[in-house]
Picture 1 (cartoon, rainbow, N blue to C red):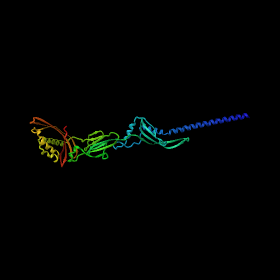
Picture 2: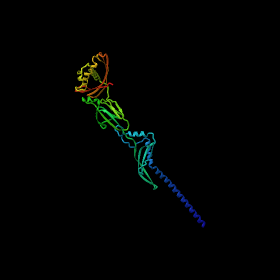
Picture 3: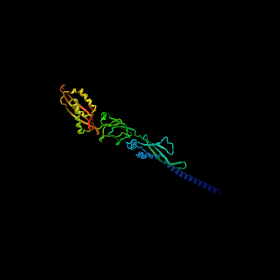
Picture 4: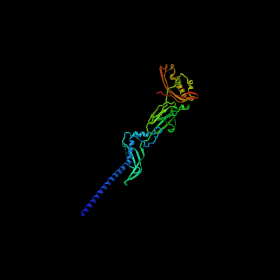
Length: 366
């Protein structure tokens, strides 16, 4: 009887131990699977995975998540900063790391780098949360913002043109928004301004440019003007063109007749109608006739060669200039010598009381 009880007791404990082992094994298997699964879920929910997606998009050229400001100049495309950003990061390794000053676990901040250059800051925020195993908190994240880091336009140019011309920057006309100061006088029109309306100089300043622009200036006739560049200053010079036949003929004739005054072959009185009555040139002619005309006394009939008219500039309906050049040759018997007088002048004509008059003469002789 005692042996039977001992066997029964041994069987019970063997079964009990086996049961415990099975139960422990089950819970170990169960908990191990649950823990692994929960840990996998927890790992997959880390904000670094969101950042990997952001970086992957940037690396592929997708910058749609970034907010680029419009260009700081109306003369450049709004996409100019995005294009410059794309160019700056092309071919570089894109990486990220958490910002050193990021302390909010619900809204971490990350910095993105292209090689070693800091190119963007990313703000991430938690939008939902749930508990795992009573000790882990799993959160769902979304990107709050991606702020690119780039230089905005800081270049400035100055454009100086006559007020009868128009200027454009990258194909966009400048206007009163870029106008600086008051219109200025052109020194070469100082005399002519007393008799007619003359062009004034306008100055425009264009700032906030990202790159060197294309500047074009067009004159009043629609012709592209020559632009001289000195540093960041663009200055349009008056555009000269082909001289109309009638103006060329009269300009050459008038220039030669004025030369005849200096040689004593024509009287000043015969030419007075070509100048304003108060012209500064009249006293100069008279002074020459009274004091210096003796140099050409007793000469043979002059001959003219190398006659040319050029650089016709029509400033407005009542004002133009034309260059006239020629070589005048005279033999002086009393001095037994041949005089060669080369003349190259700019003549300014203005319409005064219905007549075209010479209001100024500028020597271009070197």
